Length: 319
Image 1 (spheres, rainbow, N blue to C red):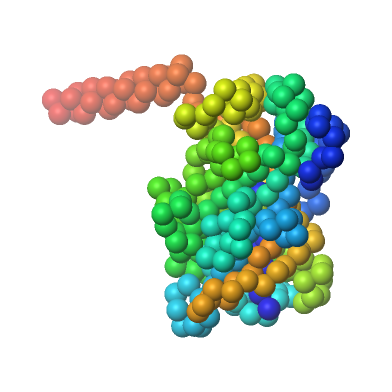
Image 2: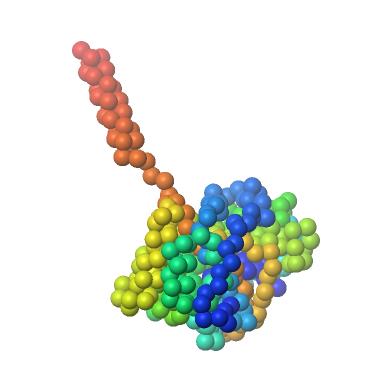
């Protein structure tokens, strides 16, 4: 068995979109237990709720080399109550796995909170929620080894755990030029997002059984970009999404919190591979704070004055 990394993007029968606004739920994962990365979920009133359902051929792939001596074999967790076996070394969307079985996305949109411009555009154009998807993984010309991975897989660098705690933390990284995450309408890309490492933590619970595990997976805030060359309908859809992101602060954060694992086997020769279901939220949030220009100028002037004062003292003492 694996120490599964995350469980990390409904069709409606009516023609018009019927949306039930959701209230932002407080996380049930105790983030105060996470000590080795500082990223946390950011509260938002604008959230797109996606779910990658295995029965719809969605989700993501968790892959490790079967050779225990290979650098990408994944580590065996030392955390209290951790599941036996190696951890997932690579993570990529099901559609980017070596065995996609016709998958075209990682998850489908199920519901939303806020996003008023997007809401209005969907209703005005009779667009189904389920037509909006999210995908992540290596770029199409590359293989899955270029997707999110555990790097050197070193304890204290790429993952963190202790035999005294049920918490394990990991940082999954990729080359920003090799990796992408984006929203789609059908199979058409709408928005692409900037790169972030992805931060994973699992609470292995009070028993070694996976039924009391709770997994979280999240990114830093990243910018959103409209894909070029869209037709009028998809261009308007992308614009509506960007308007809401801009109004909420200019960035998005991806957050997945999952106490319920759904797992399906997959086959890749030479690798241990499984598919996992994928609940994921896109939260419109404020961009990372940067110093105001006046503050930057003040710091610069302080540095210049300090340097001038030291030089004057040195000159005086030299006489």
